[in-house]
Length: 224
Length: 228
Length: 44
Image (tube, rainbow over all chains, first blue to last red; front, top):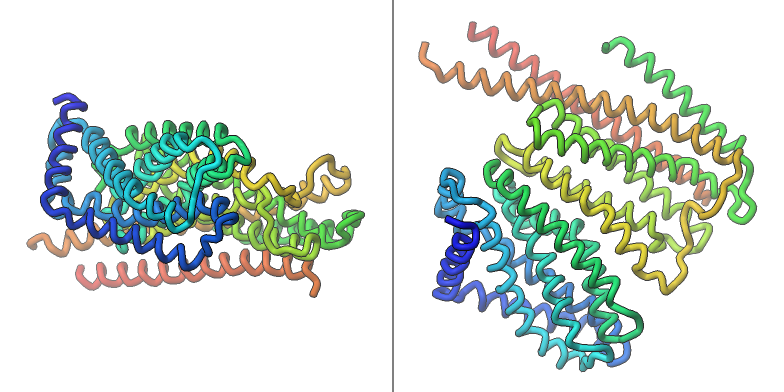
């Protein structure tokens, strides 16, 4: 079975399972909403300053929401001993990984799409720079969090305190990406400087770590 | 092997004392910062030592992934642990230097901030090693170590441009250095390297012993269960 | 207070602390090895 077919098959299966229960999606959305509300109380959305810090706030909100989503990436597979099947089968494990990453990406992207309008409303945001650029920035940033997050979620499977191990590993490694996505977002919202360097850095980060994850996932899968 | 260790320890102690004497009394006093600048002679060598150890960890992790040699894994965990120790010293001496000189405890100085991120990554690595269950910890840890090492240039570049709108005090100073100060700096670095080597050797032996113990315990439990 | 001396003291505290920690771990390991030796010889 080719990598592409296996990836899409796994993705479709995950999507079907998620859609049937919708529990995870709803609770995640609510969590993201709560984070935005708490931020609005903690960081005064006074119009001038908020544009400068909004980039940071929104990404922190997305970061915490994605960790909640990422933590249950492999839960179903572990529960039903699916990973053993993948280890034995000749199917390329990269397909499984890619399917999980894309699934997580779509999931988190959906949450971002739904919570951003709320953020804009609470913080009275208006992009001074070219607003369309926020989409590629969001896509690259989300991919950065999700690709490493899915990998570290797999790494954390056989550890005590699995749920805390994921952010412990993910946050330090993601710092350059977080710096880049926050700076790019702030650049676009305030138009005080160019986002170009940050977008290039984010792209570089994504390429490096996607390749690293794809190369090393098999090793991690066999080691669990 | 074990007998030369105390001799080396004494020699290293002497070397460190000499280097300390150089740092506190022989090195010329810096013009603008005064005596506090002498923290530099501990701050910088610690940083260089930590970076060297983290580099060793990267190489050991890659080699381990290819060859799966337990001794190589022992090198990996040892270098990470001793590296974190020296990295901690950098992060403590940095603010202690910054406070009297610039009035603030922390500056988003490129070097200090990169060191902080490095520290975070390798502490996470050590926590992973401690929390990981099952016999495949070395493999998992090695992959994480590779990720951490890949991150290093990205960390450097991202922080370099970050927050540069406000000129930051550069800890460690830029520009050329007085040759007398350079000599004291290098002496302290060599002394630190000797100390790091001894600590490395100790920790490495400890790890090897632990590996042998685990293996023996494993064998024993197998023997106890086999019918007589 | 003199930050220079605090910094040097802190560096040494950390180093000595780590060495002490290593020594402790050696002791624990030694005890475990002895226990193992004793158990094996008791069984045989």
